[in-house]
Length: 257
Image 1: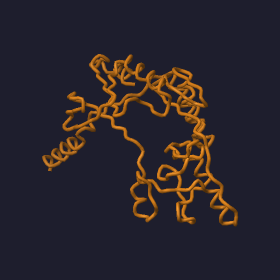
Image 2: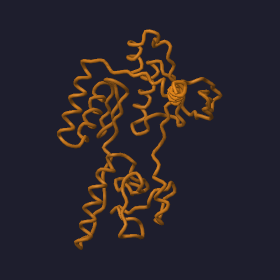
Image 3: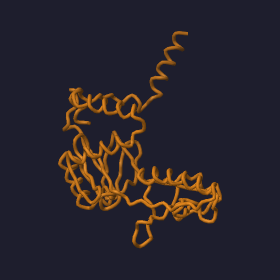
Image 4: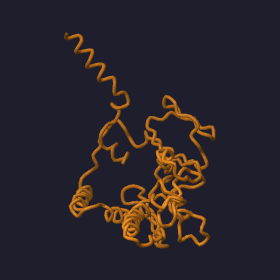
């Protein structure tokens, strides 16, 4: 995307850019097999992206970045991603919480010790019944959240009608990730894909999750047109100091008055 933007800004070339990816753990994309994670690192490095594993961001002040390995650099664009964390509001409900702040739930999605209270999704700690050792919990992903919502609704109806609630059980089918236009990795149903097939699977899966037929057609049309027209690029430099334009406009108004 950044390389495409350089084409419409003659004063910027791809060689002017430097991208550094910092990851605190020893690998990226932990959702897929290690081999696909290693493949992804190689692909990023081929594009000139420097990947630093087992490294943490220690300081980021006034565009000056310092990493745990001693690296110091000046960065104009900083993108931060973090893991999933349950909403802290659940701490105010007086419900039992797990070590990481998730609501402790039974396989039936009922809160432990509170049969009339239910929990599902990213804020719930639901046992993963597909784990042979019985020690894991369902991951905070859309695969589980969507299915848990349906099961929770069915269980609420069942209980109100005098029936026993059913336990939630779903085997994680895998993960897909896009690495840019026409590039990706996928590990689905023990099938590993990379490159264009993985990217196509990524697009197809997300399209299947888009609600309503009308919205699906609109998104497909937009994606199809994107194959024939270049991406739109907008300069974001003005938002770094958004108050400047306001102050300048206000000053002109005062002078006019």
